[in-house]
Length: 422
Image 1 (cartoon, rainbow, N blue to C red):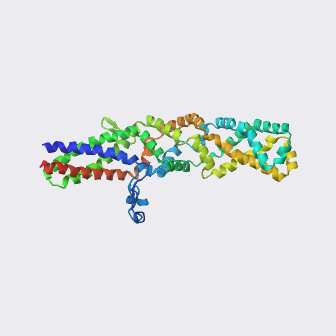
Image 2: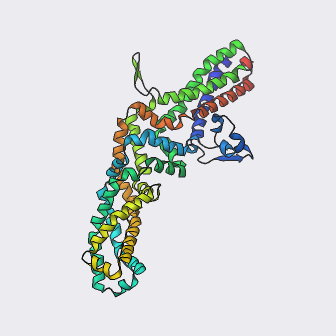
Image 3: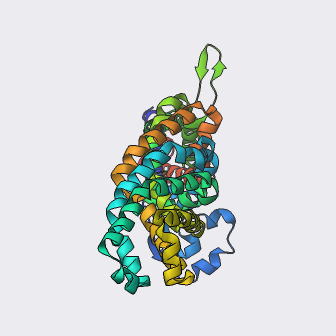
């Protein structure tokens, strides 16, 4: 009788430990920890694909890295394919950030730099002309450029907005960001599914206890020493499997008799959408990161060319009536070089104000509202896919972890209580 009671309680505790430790393995550590084994990296290439997916195997290490941070780059790709691309295009996000407000912000940051910028370029490219120019002429040139600056910058932000779909590669931006900061993807997963993950741990005990009832009966009837470890594997695997199913399935509400069943995660889609929007708008699709990607990303050369192209005629216009005279006085080649230097220098100074964290936070409010609205409108199946697709290929590692712990739990119970309680 005592044995019949101890087995369900024991399997319940093991089930709780399986899911609790499974979540730790899902997220920690952020970077690989373990030992390097000489020759293992070469040998691992011949292993089955599933074994190659074990953290550290392909780099010749025995140890562990959280599944989520280990797959950070892949999850960045999936986040774009399965989620972000469905919520809006680069143009949608850029328009939500407010091109007019961005232009005004750039002008405020750029205007105080105009005198220094002009003087630096003129001294570098044609010091004699700048030295011989009367102070009043210098002042007029600086004042004219300063007055023209808002129109110049607005033309630049308009050109960026017009070509943003070609300049901004969301997938490359997110993948690079996740690869450099794996803790970011961990925060997204933890915060996005915090309630469901906590529920999964609690249900580990419930599922383990319920599985323990038939295990106790079979142990009493069969009385074989190997039964508890073998059934422990089944219990451990199924506990994690049912935990994942409880969170995500079914995606759509289904009627089962008088009851309506739906996965815990899709059931609170509206609430989770707000959390997801805060994370994405606050840490992923920000004005700072867009500006950095525009200037330094794989298409950064095109952005710089676009800004320079937009700047050149604007600079000629800013020079006003002096344009033709100066060009004749110093020669077309030197004049074009001055104009090119001003346009090149303006590239960094134009994109630079994108990096203002405070301004970025203010603009993020509109991005957050857009993502929350569209995320809440997604079909439940697509909403579930946003979170699960990134880890689905690696879920078997969690199930295998449950099976190993279940096997160990069976051995421990056998050692403590014997076969059939004997």
